[in-house]
Image (tube, rainbow, N blue to C red; front, side, top):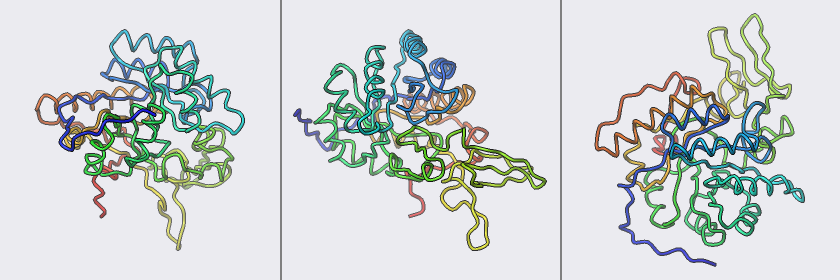
Length: 343
């Protein structure tokens, strides 16, 4: 078992330019992300090996090969998310996804399942491995285990840590890199542990790659507005002047004590644009934008905004004043757990 070096507490990577890791749910979105300034794009195969397994999204092998070539020609990297958990005794399509990512010269595979990580490390030692947020590794012991045992080079941190906690974590796990979410949809569940969708539809994001599968979604127009349903259950009711959001249980509006409210989480988007200097000082290696299910216009707008933000910080200039309200979920923004302002 390889050992990680013990870093000095004074070690700092605050002067290192972080990578901007951007979503690409389609070949068109990949090109838009690269053209807008992404350092890396992350993608998935068109099957249940990735956690965004929706109709019309993702890549077949030919498309991914072409996408990798397009990115590499322009100096960008491609990371392949194989971040669902294989069915017991039926790991074949997950093993094939790892093999194909390596064959197509992907720059890394993003994995969550410990058995699949072991398989990838053993059978494709040349393939760089990143630990998915779905693995929910947020402390030094867990992260160092994956690094020492399987050679994992980067961990995508769950969205539960403050900036100060991330700053304290980084020197304890060096040289393992950290990647954090900076924009996009939030999840109130511990990543990799959500079972809400499976209760209603029989399919889960962890196993099938689908949170609220499209085939289970229904919208019904009434005299009062629009009703959204998931698996036959009413998730929300919207007035005519409200935007009808996608029905997920965690962001549903339910009646409790005779009052309709968002019991789990209001629709809102993470936006850390103003916190980029602090995250860079904390030693974060990569900034991740969420949204593989979003269109190329969303991808281009967010990538351009964060490209300008990162470049400004690294040049010692003020952050640009960029309004992203129009593309946030519910038209609302939050810094989430990074500040934990509720404490």
